[in-house]
Image (tube, rainbow, N blue to C red):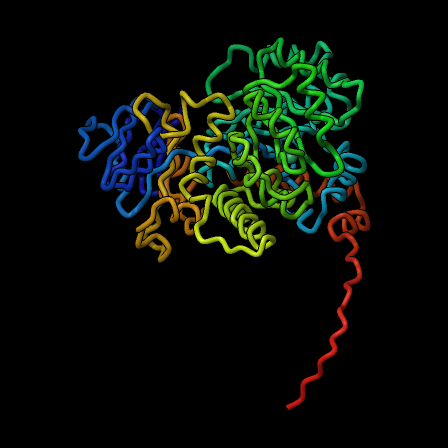
Length: 479
Ligand SMILES: [Zn+2]
């Protein structure tokens, strides 16, 4: 590897020991220990010591974390990375408009290089925002060439990724049972370990013949998890959950994305099977899957992880995910109380729990809890330093969890480590060719705009606005 240097000339080469000094260390270990003025030492990609005034090898890169928070890398369990090349295009969509655009009209137009472009940009954006692990819910893989392009992009960025293989253009019982699918898995993932994981991604429609069973069986044979959009109003509901449960297709690492419009019976089935939820509050709030589900999931003790879903609408940082999720959860607590003419005197959900969902919750959902998700000796060094000496937002830090959830933003992500490698330092991505990401993304946008034509391009972005109903007002007021 060529030597990578920071803007100030500091060597950031792979394998160099690193020590964070004098930070507020938010360990997210089992007791959620906070250490003021603490150090974190990283050797060979592993966290080897945490505490005050640590001895470090002479060769170590010393990072001044004073005034900052050292926390575990954040984990996103559901993002459609291929859609990032269309960043913001669907900002005013509903879920049905999204389905029409991608599933019915234009999803087929995406070539392997377009999947590559979206994935590359999304991967860079993730690590830049301190999201060190992302599940690439990649349901635009129409061919194996598309899938190879997706993995090529993920392998080109210094982050931790899980390819959740999917294809919305055909049934999962079709594509997952073809020899090319297993060949692809064996060629790119089997025994690979390291920073790249694999899941199978598809939705269960509720068809009583349960054709998806074949895809669950493939997942079981390969020893990989299934991730599925569940509890999505108008698309997947209680029948989907019941079929999975009755056919024995739920497992401890099945991830139920959204899980919003479901009956108590479905939540009980998920809880009993040991399933995990991925809550995408920004998505559920504006697309219409149902009310963001954390308030309900908590009642049934279903473990929660967070996700952002897609950049075709929303932001891809977990600060926003944490903030919108706690807001929606608390709004529901107030609303439920107000419906009974009661007032909430103490909030139920605390910032500390939401930071857990963004870090350790994601690690648990992915079966990586023994490796990442917290700052503990022996774990891999996926670490984020929130620090910005030029920002009035970073002082005072009197409530660390409250600070991370309610105050911090991408601008505060100073340094990011993945597996002990420095991927962002002093606020800038390291060893990254952003110009190339811009170029391939521009090519995709130009190609899609040309393919659609100006009218369809504009209509797709600006759906019709319904007529606004104005209420009669009996009052007049004149001074
Ligand atoms: Zn999704």
